[in-house]
Amino acid sequence: MFAQAIEDILQDQCTPAVVRAIEAGGSPLKLWQALQGAGFLELLASEDAGGAGLPLTDLFPILCSFGRYTVPVPVAQTIVARALLGSQFAMPSGMITLGAALRREAGGAIVCSFTPYGMLADFVLAQDGDALLLLHCAAAQREASGVHGSLTATLRWSDARVATHVPGAGPLLPTFAAALHAALLSGAMTRVFEMTLKHCNDRIQFGKTLGKFQAVQHQLSVMAEHVAAASMAAEAAFHTDAAAPSLLAAAMAKSRTSEAAVLVASIAHALHGAIGIAEEYDLQLLTRRLHEWRMAHGSEAHWNVLIGQRVLAADVSIVDFVRSV
Image (cartoon, rainbow, N blue to C red; front, side, top):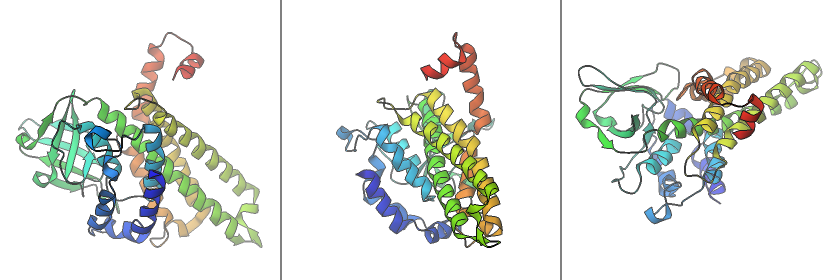
């Protein structure tokens, strides 16, 4: 029910033209208000707190839709942030993104580096040990990443007193961030594969469609394998009755989707040729997101360290370890 309702809104309100306009500095308010007005920001909040109380298994396809449409506002992050803040906290009004790497400088300043949607967000929710810090972006200096069309930014607050300390739930933030970006990557990769398959079936070269060439078929099959494997890993992180994904499942999901993102993007552009990087063609909207979301909250290299540590610490064979996940 929720997945289809969000799909309908995104089809109407989050067109490629809207994505391009927001990336170019246009206002995101119309899109944001459409999502907020439909009540989708409270999907994970409990019913007692006025939310939908949606289980994680039902949240996964919704996050995938956000990835498919390359939604240029931090709606996925806000859904998670509002759930982490809980009903005991006065909920801020506006876009909340999740801080990827918080550090405190000697002079008391707080810096959140390479924060997804940092150019647009009204607030940043970041982990600070076992607690959370809620930071108002109006008081921050924003430094764009410099990447074309990117909404990622490094934010710096000169005075730590602007932060609101929220006890508890700190360790859950990186877990949720990894899982939600895995779902976003899954949705975007699926759309990239669909576009590439259609292009190869429609584009005629040397008297036949590209898809009739064996070398192209091989590349498409490799692409399909990685998209399927990555999507399964992402879905597994949400396949739980718990209120939050497990850290290991989230790590495996983010690692597998991040690893696949590079390969899927490269094959897509190889099979599309020059048209794939054209500003007017939608493929580059998706593949840029693949590279950006791969790096957000840790690439496969980051999460593979945690996975490797868990494997080494387990007193079982690798096969039994995989079965236990």
